[in-house]
Image (tube, rainbow, N blue to C red; front, top):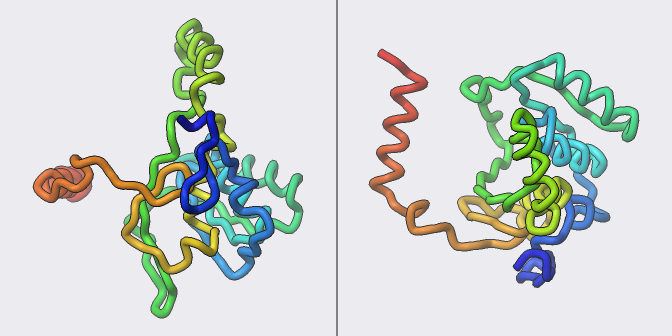
Length: 192
């Protein structure tokens, strides 16, 4: 159970925070593209990576909101290197010679503002959730760990949970289901 703090092979657990898993790491040679960077886990990931010297590109749906977040982070971390761009993953191309790793992760169950428009349900979820769910700082830990920690340098094609390699569910390993998802996603993004 995450709240008991059992540590995995990485030395971190589900109760570790993004600050803890990146403590003392210099990310000045790195660039990270953070989607959903204007709130919640994306904002915390942006803040922590920027505090470690990473050049952060905030990919957001609302550029004005992204610029406001950038200014907030710059007040805390004046030396931060942050750019804001409209989220358009189809336009993100790789430069030749750049080392890119791709991993997937599960941040865990987190208290967020997803129910903010459901007054009583939101209040109840926040009241109960703080005892059983991760906070945003804990939820962003695995993202920051995978993006920055030396233990993950050069690792690609893996699945992480609670700052440790994990086994994905059988559904995640189902190649037929993956093919169907790819075809469905392609039909939505490339209509004929």
